[in-house]
Image (spheres, rainbow, N blue to C red):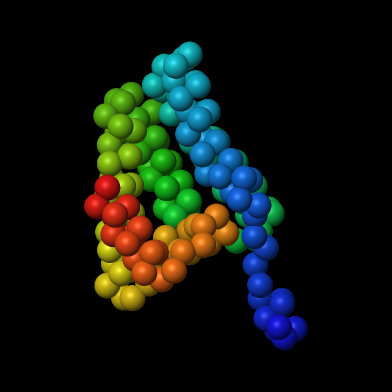
Length: 141
């Protein structure tokens, strides 16, 4: 590996830490929601999502695209939920995020790239055909 490649290489998070940063805000949301209600849970989700992105950036000096898109959706729909005091918006967020991810997964396949191989790069080792199959199945799900 050349020196230029070493300087460009990004720091990677340990798989357990990456999972905790991605799932932590959701876990905190459910805890706050079960104890304090949907509006408190939404506020906790928004704050925890921003903190998770900040920690990710502090550790790696970059923010992955999918968590960034999710964070934007959480902040937009969570903000609408709190501003309008209507839980419908935060409930719609999950459906819209999943539709966007499915579109991105299928779009990636159209351009010859199984995007899940990028997301799960350190967690799973699959062949290119395996990544394509998993991408199609996840996109349909």
